[in-house]
Structures are given as structure tokens and as C-alpha cells.
Length: 62
Image (cartoon, rainbow, N blue to C red; front, side, top):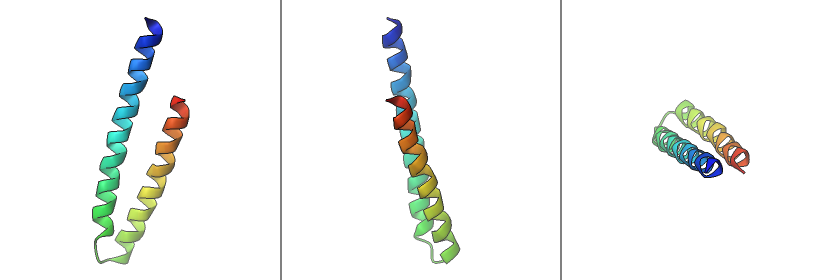
């Protein structure tokens, strides 16, 4: 039962982190659509940081 409970919490954590990362990606894509070049650079930096964080999360989960 304890292993099942732990697996449930890990699954909930992964789902929450995935939703947060997707929301940040949508924000970054909207920011990247702007005309100013600095906004595009900031958007790419945000996407790069969150991509690394996202894959590190799955490495932690495994």
C-alpha cells in the first residue's frame, strides 16, 4: 500500500510539473511571436531552461 501511495504522489507531481511547463511554453511562444528581438531571445531562453528542467524531472521520476 505504501508503494502504491508513493507512486500516486509521484504521478501527481509529474502531471503538475508537466502542466506548469506547458503553460510556460505557451507563454514563451506568445512572447516569441512579438516583433521585438529581445522578446524572442527571452522566449528561447525560457524554453531552453524549462526543457532542461522538464527532462530532469523525468530522470528524477525514473
